[in-house]
Amino acid sequence: MSFFNDKVVIVTGGSDGIGRALIDSLIPLGAKIATCARNYDKLYNLQLQYPNVLLHTMACDVSNENDCKRFIESVIEVFGHIDILINNAGISMRSLFNDVDVDVMKKVMDVNFFGAVYCTKYSLPSILENKGTVVGISSTAGSRGLPGRSGYSASKFALQGWLEALRSEMTHSGVNIMWVSPGFTASNIRNSALNEKGETQGESPLDETKLMSAEECALYIIKAIEKRKRTLILTSSGKLAVFMNKFFPSWSDKLMYNHFFKNNKLIK
Image 1 (cartoon, one colour):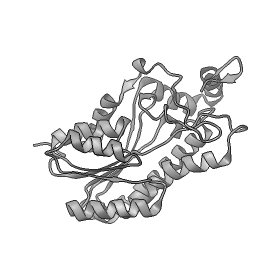
Image 2 (tube, one colour; image 1 turned 180 degrees about the vertical axis):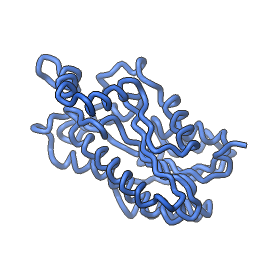
Image 3 (cartoon, one colour; image 1 turned 180 degrees about the horizontal axis):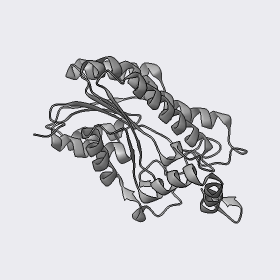
C-alpha cells in the first residue's frame, strides 16, 4: 500500500508546473488532494481530467490571508483533517534592484513567503494532530542570492529561515518540516515572472528542454516526503551553486555575474 494512500494532501498553486505535476503523481498513489490557484479555468480543467476522483479545488490568492483561511477551512470541511501541506505557490521576478518598483518586491514576498505562512498557520493544528508534514518549495535562490532576482531570492531566504525555525519548534511534535530547492526546472514560473514594473515577462531565457522536468521534480519531492527528509536540493547546478557559495563565496559572486550577465547587461 502506498504511503500516501488516503492521506489528505494540500498542494498550493496546483494549476501549473511543479504543483500540477505533484497532483498528477499523487492521485494514482491514493492521496486525497486539495489545491488552490488564482486561475479558476485551470482548476476547472484539472477537475475535468479527474472526474472520478474526490479532488477539492478553490480559486485562491495565497497572498490574501482571508483567502488562505477560507481555503484551509474548506479542506477540513471536505476531508475532515490535513496530513500534508505542500506550499508550492510562487512567483518570480526579473529586474535589477536599481530599476525595480518596490511594489514588485512586496508582491513577490507576499506570495512566496506570506502565502506559505498563512496556509501553514491555519493548517498546522490539524497537521500537529496527525503528526504530518509541512513542505516549502524553495529554490537555489533561497541559499544563494541571484542577480536580477533580488526580490525572489529574499522571499526564498525568508521562507527557508522561517521553516528552519519552525522545524526547531516542532522537534518533539512528530511533525516533519521540509524545504525543497528544485534549481532550474522546466516550469511556468519563469514565463509568469514579473518585470521591473510588475508586468508578466511572458518568456524564458532558458532552454527548457535541457532542464529537469516538473514531473521528475515532483517524484523526487514525493519520495523525500515519504522519507521525512529535512531538505532536498535538486539538479547538479543547484547543488554546485550552494556548495560554491558556502566554501568559495567571492568566486561564487563572479560566477553568478558571468552566468546572469552578458555584455554587462542582465539576461532576463
